Image (tube, rainbow over all chains, first blue to last red; front, side, top):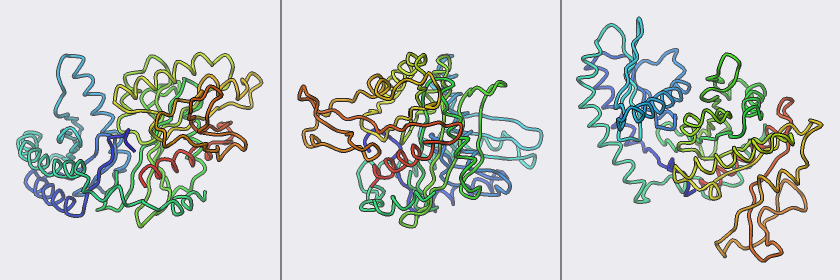
Amino acid sequence: MTASSANWSFTQDDFTSITESLKRFLGETKSLCALLVDRSGQLVTTVGDATGLDTTAFATLTAADYSANDQLAKLVGEDDFSSLFHQGEKESIYVADIARRLLLVIIFDSRTTVGLVRLRMKDEIEELTLLVDRVFSRGRNGAAPAEHLLKGADDEIDKLFNW
Amino acid sequence: MINYASREINCKIVYYGPGLGGKTTNLEHVYGKVKPETRGKLISLATETERTLFFDFLPVDLGTIRGFKTRFHLYTVPGQVYYNASRKLILKNVDGIVFVGDSQAERMEANLESMQNLYDNMSEYGYDLTQMPFVIQYNKRDLANAAPIEDLQAALNPGWEVEDASKHRVQPDPYHAGQNLVEQLSGGEWVERAPFFEAIAVNGDGVFDTLKAVSKLVLKALA
């Protein structure tokens, strides 16, 4: 499929590197959990305690929220709002762009402060940007195995539709 | 998106079309019919009068293929002309499109406007609708004022020219005996049309046929 820009894939190594980085961030900032979401609303991974959270719905709404705010930024003459902060009574969320491909969502409560999350976020964004750039540059070089996964799988695809 | 770590294939399908054409009704029927363990919540960002404001969203698991869980994210867009900014956002990174047309003769203008808007919004993202999984559903076939399928096809699915000579061969329409998706017209040019389905979404007719067709096209595009 040439039309969509959504074709890319994560390997186990990518996943491990990203997870370790996010675990470190959660520990240092005492945040509850981190979600990595692609800009089309699909969840890449969750790290930390997401008990009771509908992560699929959360990912979709985060992407929509961020996209809408991106357009609001343009209307006031900004390229983008690079991060969003939503404050709740008990829990709050902080959303930041990663390489214009992904969104990092941090959920935290009163055990930490938005100041600490924001302070540490800058380094975390840089670290994740390097990791994510590696994923996408590999995709462009055609070395990712994604395109071959479903090759010759027409029969299996047909069998999926037994509703 | 293929996630090797969680062994998931995630695909995004968008239901597009004029206001009050039945896009949300399609999702509501899918939500009501598939097993609860194979779908997530149906999320609707709608106005107080249940008109879609931003989008509806429904995740559905199709099953496992090559050991990967296959999950489709179904979205609708707000049909009303007024909401183009938010409608365009939903098309970002789309893998497949369903155009839900309203069969009523007096809605032909609204159908055409929405189809043109779809082409325009897709091309602004650099996507070519003729090169990606795309199906058309003619909804509300039960209404007395429904236009004939031939008229709807002529207006909304007349076919686009196939420039690649290697694709100049007749491709029968698997869903309509005697019709072709790719064929040569009497003038000599080759054209391709999107697969189409008739539907009465309020009672579910044609809803799963449409979803199955676009889902297959999306997965086969990955193959």
